[in-house]
Length: 599
Image (cartoon, rainbow, N blue to C red; front, side):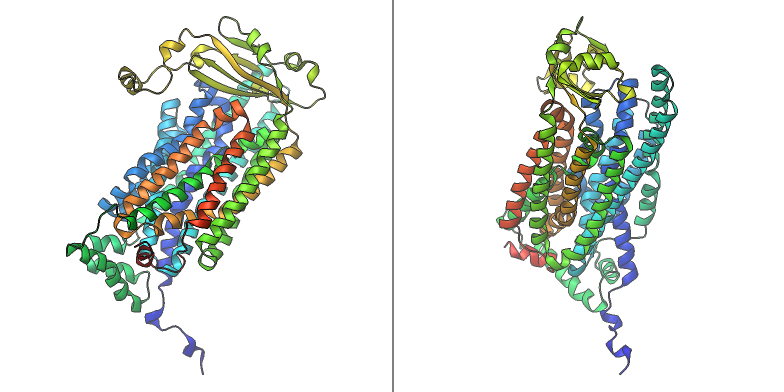
């Protein structure tokens, strides 16, 4: 008996190269999504060190720059399903690639706050489209036994995008550290000027490095076939058959095509059920809850602010960037493990395992930060007393740091000052370190804190609908130092302990929610509402993520990092309960079989 007797008949063989190409291009979409999330982590320290001075940006505006990608995702997620229905899944992916590619020069050439924010919004709009359309496309094109692997491949390339962004940030961190060593013996003013130029070039180059993946994705989408389910809805049966032939064995094409056509034929015959019936609402609400809980773990904020978090935890300069690379690399490696497990162990098991591990890691991080923040001293009265003519200006030389510390601090350990202040309703947070040459002066004044209304803001204020502070009230408000905490910078050992907790967090996230969230988004939605339902669910997902990212800096400035990590741990515990008691298993089932489960 020859080996050919055991060979799979040609009619039963799944086309390999078309499927691999499809997974690769869909994975490139994940790569762009990962770059969207991760690139700001490496650029933010230099953006904060240069743009905040050159353009007088507040911490709230820097928070908006970070959150703009997520805000753009919220806006595009709302319409992504409609766009995918109008121009097709492939057309929507091409649009996302074009927007991402266009955003790069807008950000890298920015000469002020507005173009930088606009570029980040374009990136976010692209990410929102990718987050809806690519999982939608994979769910509708791939066979049930490959659907989990397809979602895992999307997540894997997403994590590789995060690793790529972290490596770019690490490279520039070493370049900035080398420049800092070169100018160390120069006068302080000249040091600041030289470092300003180096850091300004660093964040612009970091953004330019993202251009090539966007171009590759745009070119690759042109060679994909359209979703067969979308083609059937448009009555293009022959085109749907050809699309199925690229991803399914020949013996399964006709039966799958008939299964896809059945609901469409039933609707054409008048057998339509109510859109808000329980069979639609239960899986829709379940998907929304899972996506909201995924973001409430704090994953996007931890990835975006990783370098800042680790700096605050005690890791200096490039060490924090090195830990950031390790975090993103572990994320990618554990996603490979999820790729192997998701179609074997199932979605429910991995979600329970992942959310449980995340909760424990977040609690450990909160305890570490709580211990470090207990050693701080309240210097608010000293700084409030130093306010003159509603402004605060201090030269933070060695003598000034010692005066602030007084007899409460001893030793040569660097000091860290975190203060929050306000003019009326306008507030800001500053964090300065005694071992940072860029933090040689504390200068707080009204012009850099109180911002005028935009045209849109003025319009809504006249209607008494603007929820933001009123500049006319803040124009005469005194400077108030809300809080000011001074303490030693945590030791590098403390920083590495926090880094270890974040590594555990990321490992469990990658194995559980990282992959399963995309499957929940696409598998749980019934055929009739899948595109628009996925848009709304991802809208909720991005809204939660945007809100957390926007309030992150002000919250940790006012209440410390421990409170933020505790909040995320509580949300993750809710996630575990949802996965354990409400989530059904969808492994190995067709989309139509999953829909039948909720009837």
